[in-house]
Image (cartoon, rainbow, N blue to C red; front, side, top):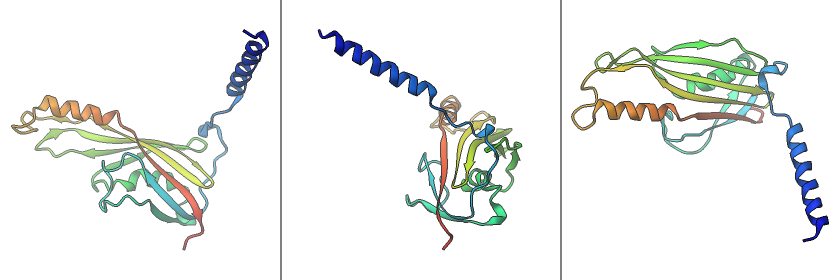
Amino acid sequence: MNPYSVCHQIVVVVSVLAVAACAETRDPASEAPVDPQAGQYKITLSGKGLLKHAGGDDDPETFCLTELNRDAFAHMLAENYYKLHPSCRVVRAPREGNAISGEIKCPVDPKMATGSNSFIYEGAVAPDSAKVEVRIKFDAKLKNGTAGEEVSNAQLKFAMKTYETMRFVIEATRMGECS
């Protein structure tokens, strides 16, 4: 075995690790606050099919962001994209730098459960983009027999816990001026 090759490989590996250790990851909360620029944005959603608004096509949507709603844009993505029931209550956390977060609490059908369910979101804004990650938290307590005869409440609770592990990401990227 050629010792030069082994030494060369070690130097390369150590160099790569050193560069990776020095690489900065973005911490939106520590950044100076900016708002996305007004303009046309392409909006994409991960987790297709689940909770996506009515319409059903897979093409990304576009949105014309105006000067009037720039500061609330990332919140609007989470709060409006899922077309939640009007009785849902929105609580926005204070913004930290370019990091945003909030919670949307929605009452449940009192015939089926008690309590509420929540959409909890966090994200970040930049001059030309916004990204929000949404997760669901089922806080409602199911009433006996809610699932019907075919599905037990235990199976329904298991499905609900599975949904809680999913994350839905909404991204908006500026494409230029509004058309």
